[in-house]
Each structure stands twice: as C-alpha cells, then as structure tokens.
Image: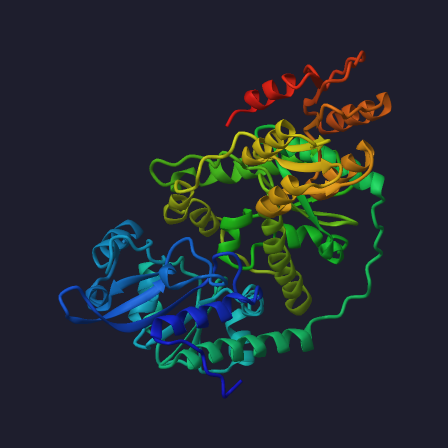
Length: 538
C-alpha cells in the first residue's frame, strides 16, 4: 500500500482514478455520496495560467465518474470568501456560478468551498461507515481521538456549506478531520497521500469496531414461510401503491438486524450520515406478520406529518411537505429489509443504503450502548434543504407505467413484440412467460432487470412477479395464450390482497366476473392486439 502509485496521464486523469478507487468501496461512499478534488494549473482561452479547483460535480458518482464529471472553479476567485463571516447557501451557489471555468460544467459540489479553502493540493471526503460509527454516540470526540489519534481534528455537526467550510479551514494543520454524523476529510500534496490517509483511518476505525463490538448471541430467528412472505409483501405493496405503483425489493441479508430486540432503535435512532436522510428518509418502518400493515404505514405517515408541522416554521420559501411520505425502507421481522421505489434499481438502492445505515446503528449500540443522532431541527433542515431539493427538479418526468408489474405471455409475432416493447418503454417491469426469441433477447439486453423471463404456466409467472418485483398489476395474454379459471382466480386474489384493481388483456372468452380485475377483450384476428398496442401509445 505504501508503494501505491495512482495511474493517469495528467492530474485530472489521476483525480478520476483516485475518485474511482474510493468510489468502488461502498463502505466509504454510496450512490453519489462523498466528493474529491484537485487544484490543477490550467491554461485559459487567453493563454493565461490559472489554478483551477477541479471538484466532483453535482449528480455524479465517484464509482463511475469521468473527467467531464469534475467542475472547474477558479481558485483565486473563491479564496477571498475566507474574509467573509457569513454566507447563505443561495449566495454561495450564485457566487460559485460566477467563478466557473465553463458555463457548461455541472453545478459544483455543495462542499466546494471546504475543498477550496484547504491549502492542500488534493482533498478527499467520504461518508465512511466505520468513521460514522465512531461519531454517532454521546462520547464521540473522545473515542475518535482514542482510536484515530490525537492529531485528528473533530468538528461537531454543522450542515455542509459556508460555515462548515470555514470551520474545517481552522483545522488544516491536523492530520485529517472527522465530521460528526458526516464522515472523514483527508488531504495531501499528492493523490496517493490523500487517498492513503483515508484508507489508513478507515482501517483503524474498522479494526477497533471488529475488536470491541459486543458479540451477540444468535437471536431466535423465526423465518417467514413463502406464504407469509407473499401475503405480507402483497399487502405492503398495495398500501404503498395508493398514489403511485411501487416496486418492492427485499434484502434478506438484513435478517439478523430484523430480529434484534432493539430493532425499533435501529430503525428510528438516526441515519449514519446526513446523505442517507436524503436518500431513504429519516426513519425506517418495522413490521411483522402480526401487524395490520395499513395501520403501521398510516401511523408512520402520521408521525412524519407531526414532525413536519412541529418545524413548519423552518420550511424554505416555495416548498411544502414532500408528496410521498410513505416509508422507503423498512425492517420485516424474520425476513430482512424492504425498499420501495418506482424501479427495481431504485428499490435495491434503497435497501443497500439502509443496510449500511442500519448496520452502523447496530454497531453503535453494541459498542457504546446508545445512539446520538442529529436534533429534529437539524434533520428537518437536511430533509428540506433547497440545495438538495433542487436536484429533484432536474429529474425526468415519471413514465406512465412506472412501478407497474405486468406478466406478458406468448410473444411470438411482431405485434406482440411491439406490445412488450411499449410496456417496457412506459416504465413497467415485466415477467415474460414463454420461450425467448431474438427480439425478446434484445429487449432483455436493453432493459436489464426490468424484464424477467420464465418457462412454465401462469402460476410460475405470478410467483416470479412477486419474487422479483413485489406484486402484480396486470396480465397480457398473446393471441395463442390460454389460461384456466383457477389461474384467473389466482390473479384476481393477488389484486385483492394488494387492494388494487388489476387487468387481464386477452382474446379468450372469460365468463367469470371479478371485483378487482378489469377484463380487456380483443379480437384474435391480428387486429385486436394492434389496437391494444395503439392504446398503450408511443
């Protein structure tokens, strides 16, 4: 490790490599978290040489970032801000916009001034799980010094921005800085020096945790049966899908957390780092098979509403309560952790973030006995932070079938392939029942986890829809596909468990009527399914 040499043809390419090395470790950063920078001499359009702060741009991910992911800010134009005493977020953003090397660059990181104010050439900031474990309890500063060293500065929690940047500047003679409830800042005159400091301190913190955490005896783990899982999952999805259909993913690796006797503390004792509040909300739901799921979710929402109205005087101008205050993650006793989103990737992302934040909380409890999190006011100010809410305005419109789960059976002709493709384009997640062909393989390659294929009968496809996506909203049967009354009854029972109206599109004559199922009949002469395709739209 001491002989490490970060590869690259120039300083910017080395910054990319250093960032990716940090980004590939989910224990350091997750999904857009953390930021890195280098101060690089560049020549402008007039031939003048300037020191440019190249810093991770907004909306990028350290794991995959490229050179175009780093925004450029003229260093000499931001250093005069050190003489200011105060600066609002809005003033800071407006000022930085005037210091940009290129107007086409991404908005620079919220923590640009933190990086710029430090004299070092290279700066790294990560949201390390191990470091946050050391900071999220009442005696955090003493423990940080004990574990990492007396030359490590400790900064009590301040929301990122001008004030924190100025405070960090005060400690630049330290070896590194730990930010309470936030993470680690390291720096160096070489890429290697800054990177190796991060790895060194992360390893010290991790070793301390491994050697000192209380080893719990195995909790009694009553694993849920398939039937219990199906019933709970379908009921949960229905409750969470009242306004917008949701994909539900369950991470079974969090089973050990779900059966702890302090599971409620893990769920509501605070996120490991402020980034997680933005990604998965401030609390997790906890549910069991004995719970009335609707009541639990409504109680969760009521608690959120109470919290919102307690602090409504802090809401930024122009903003109101989030439109979706459902739980985005939750621990299911005897199973693991669920995540909810309009895409499978999003739901999986939620459970991965939750795994890190839940495990940090568990480790803090096992090491130190109790948790210390942000105050409600501090949480609210992150929850309704204009600089982060701004990013939501940049998101593309939600597709019309986002969050929907559809089984399509029998894709054997051009029109049936067209229907499949349109349903995927509209954002639905699909279980394809039947043999794959060249066209469906191409769609599978394009849409990835959004499309699952199975061989067998409709019963198998239904279970696949529940296992992969969390439920079912509709079945589209190809012209040559037939289904039995028992299978139709099962489909309707799925819709009823979710308390959602579903649909079946078929050329088959169906005499039965179902309260929760809309039957859409089309002609089997080749024109009917074309009409369905036109109905779905482009």
